[in-house]
Length: 122
Image (tube, rainbow, N blue to C red; front, side):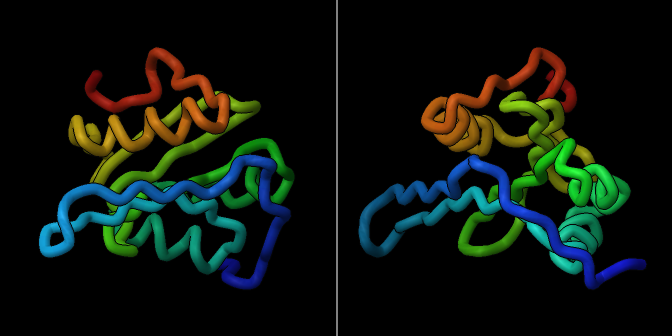
């Protein structure tokens, strides 16, 4: 696989959400993937086909974001023209309600529409 390609970041900003008290704090991040190595790692760790979107990312026709909890990927998000068109958890599972809540908060802040069919198994 191509692990050297890089592409320009979209205009969508990263997002961090922290919840809970000091001893039970959870830190969620939405981070854009902007290189082939990260895209490959996302697909490998999440057991899905996101790496097949490499050429779309390079062309700029889609952007891939990773929702991470404590720096570990839990959901992958495909965005095209400010629309989230796919939101998939591990092995393409439906994200948890909490994960969807964090994604909704990010999407609202960034003016991203979550399309009707974006969330698996909805």
